[in-house]
Length: 451
Image 1 (cartoon, rainbow, N blue to C red):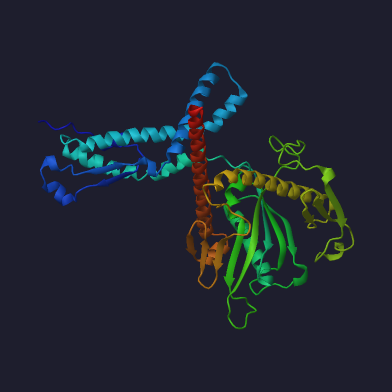
Image 2: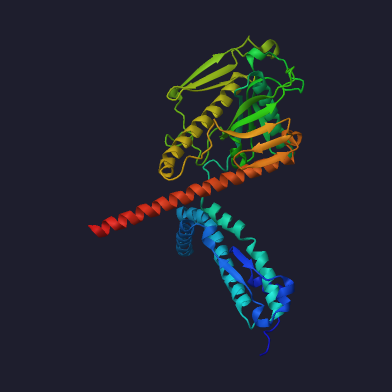
């Protein structure tokens, strides 16, 4: 019997554009070459895509892709802005699914080639290498498809504000608040993110004393990051950041634990544009001026002759929710008023979003325990004695703590891990939602048939 024709590596690679997880077991190279040709295909391949892509997600992706294809046909006949917007929303899913299906077809073809006992030995060897390489990409591609199905965060494309407040730990907590503030500021400088300090307020009772490391005792600080999409980059940083270290004032060498609360809020343009409509009562960003109590007062703290002599500070209180914002960092009352309005809108919009998420979580909590980040969670620990930073959600340990606190590349690794965890959590919740919906659908069908 004549051998199969030779196929070059490039052609084989073209066949192997696949990402379906394979569990491939081959004989060792020595024994493989020692046995007869008919026994060289000692091969076990398990094509189990369900372990990487939940059936509910695959079904959802197929449904959305069908909708995408139908809308594309409609738009080719006549343009409609609403349909065009929907096509844009669905395109990411459609592209990811088509890549998935194309890869499955390629893997099936390569698998058939490997299982053919009459196939050329050299071609089998090449195909085997290509298959092993390509199957390693499956997990990443499956994750991309799953991530494309998760709803995009409503504030993902916005700039953001990082708000820092000391938690438990007394003066040490205030000092570490300054350390975290400077860490994120240094990160912005290294990355080239446009940023500005909206608030940097010392604690009244701590005076102006600084630690031996040059840390200031902060009461509150707000850092605005003005680049579009900053909210999506930093939203995984929200939560309680814990520090374990020996304070410079500790004479007995005992390790103290303190914490800092970090909020990540969306930052909106001052007048509102597009979906950010400050005049629309249905918008998350709308604040009724009649529901806000505004008080002018004298600024406190260090600041020269201007402090305590003019009423430049502003305090706003949203009466229905009790949300309070104070701003005194600028000499101009008008500037403080504008910054206070920006902060008030951001806090109220975030509260409204959280309320919607809590409603949606009721469905999930019947099946899945609550895993959302809350402001009381200890999401990260900075351990000075062990020179280690740990993100408890992602399960990542990074050493070289000074590099982390300087906003260096080690901090990038921690933040990347936290974002990956956040995406994974969103995918997990989406799977639960889809399974619950499918179960309810089946129950309704059973009830309909029984009537």
